[in-house]
Length: 362
Image (tube, rainbow, N blue to C red; front, side, top):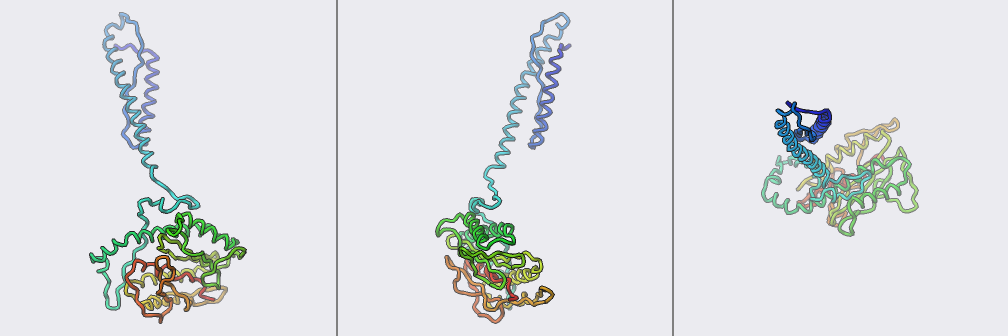
């Protein structure tokens, strides 16, 4: 027979509520529910004749509940420590880019594992060779591994360019001055590349060519030219890491009537990239670009025009700390028969094919 007073029942009830709350907390943390045993409140009781037979059993139960209460506290403390460790492990070492972007890309990827862009397989040549040996040959694999550090420098610059480009596209709006646009773009590029002298920084002044101006226009101080809703602007900027230059451009427009024109240029750009490769003749790259571009028509103000490339504008190769490094890439057929060579910078030949891209109707 047990002697249980009213205060003991109330304490048991309150401890049961605590146990239920701890079970819910453990389930949220993904742990197994913590089993807690209620502790009876110790109280000196006077021995009476009515409870004589149950005194021994009552004392034993009080000792048992005293031991289990210690386990209860230990389980509670261990559950709290586990949840704290999980929250710390989830948040430790994770750095996310701010908006607007301000954290250098090298800090976002401290191990140097920068994102790898799209990899395109070689197109079959005129003799039906697929250049599969360039990806399966042990010699070619060893040569690529020897250049991995150079590739990572290019990828760092490419990621800086991508983040800057995505931000500035959302930031630019009609009515903004070109000089303000260039200053904001260059400020963001310097922050993300962590500008440090000759080791990393801007590759050249930002170009923002409007409408009939094909390329290489940069506003000077005091230039109050404004970007309007009906303008088509070619924004050309670059960054470098240890002289490994990323030179790339994009076209910005607000009026949807230019959508087809921009789509034609994008398609021609992708065609040129797919056609390029080691031992490919530059004139063949230009022919593929022209064929794709001229397959588009655009309607402007009730008139229909065929999209045409600009004959006297070309892409170019890049070298360490050198923006124009010798070879030029035409965007029309009938150009030079010079072949592209094996070089760590071969990918950069294509990146600037269409800095001049959108005023093909001028």
